[in-house]
Length: 245
Image (cartoon, rainbow, N blue to C red; front, side, top):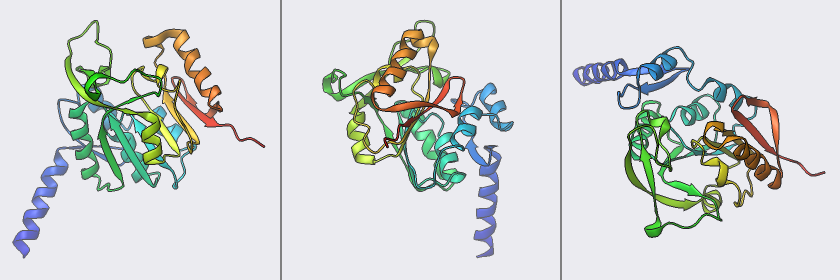
């Protein structure tokens, strides 16, 4: 029995040596995703700082989160471990990242989160042939996109498509967290946001310019959401549903 306990302790210590800790979240070191820049920001508790500081200002423990573009799984882990949310549904188009997110959740003993490898579409988007969308995977991972990159190599993969409205009905989120590298410009033009009280979104002006920014705000206003400055910072903005009296 003592030998088994000792062996388990040695394995745990070895595993922790391969971890980078950021704001109390253990992140497995994987050179495919954790380059020098990311490693530095993680080790200095600076990774996704604007997003983290904003989330703390409006998230409730009773919230169910739908995260579009889950990346490394850091935000979903922070939502569960530090903000105590009820559940997080992670949607990520990059299948390699989905596997990494699962490792992150396991390392942090997170059980109330699920991961879906898919691309969310608005109700007005043309449904793709064979129910899949082409997705271009790049290095670094955050440049991966539904559009083929013009200035860097990429690998094409095909990912299951799903209607965002259907996902909202199925997962019943109260908050949507969205970072999909420009896809937000068309995602919310036609969608059923019933039950959603807040949308926390990273904007990408370099992808779609001023016209795209205006469209995002127009779509949010049409859905009865307003820009809320209390949790917004630079390109990360909070839209909250306007309460009718």
